Amino acid sequence: MPSSMFWSFRRVWGIGLCVAALAGYAALPLFFPKSSLILTAAGDGSAWILILATAIIATANAVREHGQTRVFWALMAVGCLTWSFNLGMWAYYEVLLRREIPEPFFGDVILFIHVIPMIGAAALRPHYAHQQEKLHLSTLNFVMLLIWWVFLYAFIVFPDEYVVLNKLVYTNNYDRLYILENMVLLATLAFFVWTSRGAWRKFYGGLLAALGLYTLGSSFINSAITKGTYYTGSWYDVPLLAALFMLIWTFIQAHKWNPEPEAVSHSGEIWRWLPTRLAMAAMLSAPLLGAWALFADDVPRRMEFRVAVTFFTMLVLGFFIFLRQSLLDHELLRLLAESHKSLENLQRLQNKLIQKEKLAALGQLAAGAAHEINNPLAAILGYSDLLMNSDLSAERKSTIQKIAHQARRTRDLISRLLSFANQTPGEKGSVEVGTLLQRALQLETLRREDGQISVTTNIAPDLPQVWGNSNQLLQCFMQIISNARDALLESNGGTFSVNARRDGNEVLVEFSDSGPGITEPHRVFDPFYTTKEVGKGAGLGLSATYGIVQEHGGQIICENRPEGGAVFTLRLPVAQNYRSSKPELVNL
Image 1 (cartoon, one colour):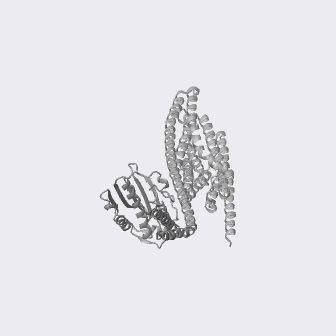
Image 2 (spheres, helix red, strand yellow):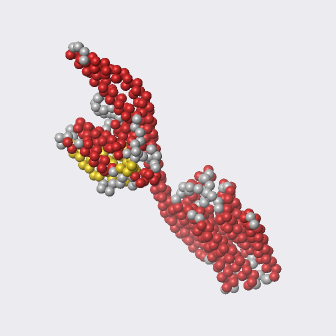
Image 3 (cartoon, helix red, strand yellow):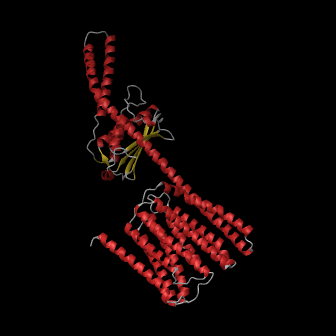
């Protein structure tokens, strides 16, 4: 049998069984009088069993789900369990004790409270993906919702129920407030039916139909109780049982439908600020109700109770609103910090992309122009040599020497440009950064500048290897050290330090000096940017260093230290991590 036919058969069989059970229940009053224990047990027992089954199914759904959907089902299970506790108390009095339900009845409080977790569950909006609010904020909203509805019950119903007993007023107030509570839940579900799609719309539609039928049947039952025509097991209970069957069917179908979270719509964005507005409305309405009780309630004991309840509720709600605002402020600061960090990363990425474009453009320019310039330079140098060997005056030979010197400078610059443009990724392997740093320091002989420069090193002994080309990395280290040496010599010496350690999945190397610092640290990697005198540097060394570091999947930054001097920070990925993750050329 195909799967679709199997499910269709099960659906038809289940609906037929529910209809038969309702028809059999509706036929019981024809055979048993209203005071019959069998009729009473059938009415109380069937309702209690069905709502308990609903709670079990909701609990099973909560175990299967995760995130906000799990919390949704957990709250629905709490609401159903509270509901079953009320029905269990009815069965206890009417079946086991064989007594009428007392008035006032404490089970009414439990019945009123059972709707609150369901409203809280709907307010979670499990059909939306990427919820913006954290779980603690959702929990806080639910607690405030619970406090508000309990306050309404304590203010409107409780005074005539327990403070100054008035059955007629208490019953009418309870029925109206209970219907209002259910209408709020139904309005929320109707809104979700309107705004959701697909499986979620079917799920919310099933909930709306079941709870709507229950609310309608509950209104008929309350009206019958007021008129004295209701008894357990009567036809008034048929809509209640039908609603419970529909609720069970919806909860079971939810697992089969397996609805996927949807993108947050415009209506979902509006819902985000609704809990705060409702909390504000609750805070503002509480003193108004307290003022009404103070001036309009003519029974002193009832008035005092209502004023006390209002005062206590305002204190509790004020505390939770303050707590919620504090959590929102903390969340806002966190988001601002993340935004600031993202902006810095974006700017850093932009600078790296610009730098890459500069290097690429320079490489193309150098490769295209170098060969054209080399030929005239070779001719100039050749003719200069010929003139030097001819019979000329000393003054003219001095002039020719200057021409040859400038031509050789130009040839050296072209050679550097060609070397810069023709940089190709070398063969890579595991490299000991600590060993390369020691070699670079030895080759630059910083310690031999007549004691003008003192060098300190702090290289971690357990420094991991990096994945790269040792010759290229050595070139980078020597270039940075050479620049620091020149800067310190210009300022009559100072201190130069090299620190290397592991930082997560990267090796962090810092070159710092106590020199005068760099006028424009953000430009040091630009081609041809140099602060040295004419003839002492072409401004290509740090640009080449930048390209090598980027090609190794790392990053390098330059900045001035607050206490003076410059610091170059170089990050290279650890060898094993680099090979496994294969980062791109530009990393944040």
